[in-house]
Length: 98
Image (cartoon, rainbow, N blue to C red; front, side, top):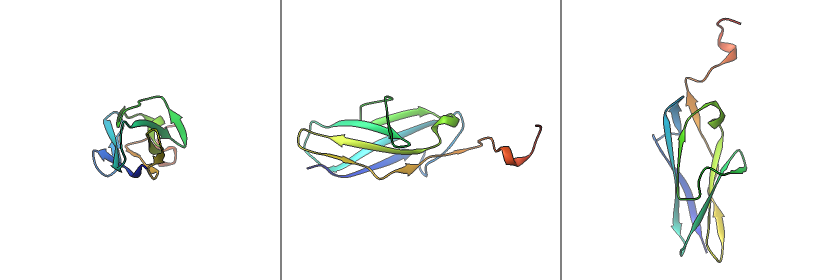
């Protein structure tokens, strides 16, 4: 069975500036291939990739929780959800022109 599914990110720390690239990697510590991957944003499957790596050009819509799911013929496992924080996002409570 598949186990030990986790996410890693570049840049590290799950914080990225608006407009920059975020690279997420799905890491599987145990499981016999071939493996297929599915990505989730906010609990819903997203059709942005089916490989172990997901590259995002970060916009406001990318602020959310991400998970990956690894599947082989016998089992599947999901990573714990991790939250992406976008630095420099617009804050309507911060003042400015209305």
